[in-house]
Image 1: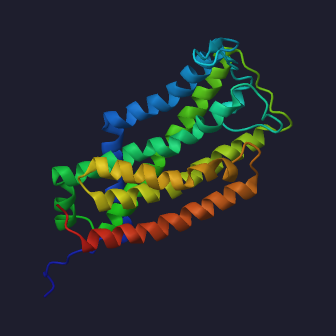
Image 2: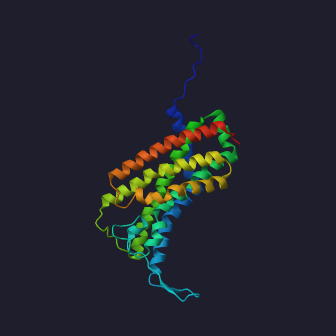
Image 3: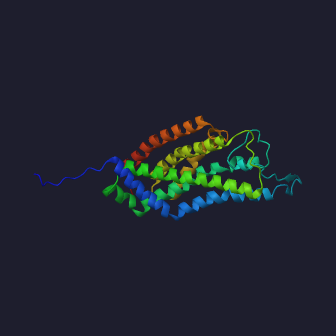
Length: 269
């Protein structure tokens, strides 16, 4: 029949685009997103300024009487990584752990709460029933988490610059150049895919149990956390960027299929 109704088949790309639009709209309207971005911006400022103010202060152990002299940071880039020959800089022990790499753990909170809210509200069950497939859901959540993580890294970088300027710290690169800093940040952003993929897998497995997904994500992320500074040093080159991009893509695809399998084989409530 010429007048027979024809149903247009929606392509995979269109379904992904539709899911991304929904998730981006939700993300950019979420208070949690802006709170985490603000935290990423403010943390390095407060930490740098406070440690600079405490530079030279002396604390005494009441039991042993041993005096400890507090050494504040000497260079702005200590918030991003360790400079060549900068192992002896003041406050280096603290900044080796409390630096921009903390963002990789902080983004776990966003991913876990973002996904658990879908299952807690019943949105995910309704979505899979009438609109999207599980693979598209996983892709959309991974991309959303990656964008959030990338923006948080940028915010932390800006906060580090502002904190260094406010504390009057040096901006000397110790033989490195601006290109190394750019490559370092690009490598960290691409490496974010690895962590987001892990957090997404754990979150879809935990579903509405946000506390469980956060604990599992932080535990899983800590297994790789100590490697971040070695993979993305301040002296990063194009090779570091390529390795992080390749690793991020491999983890995103591999763990993405894992997340899809978990959703297919488990209850949605």
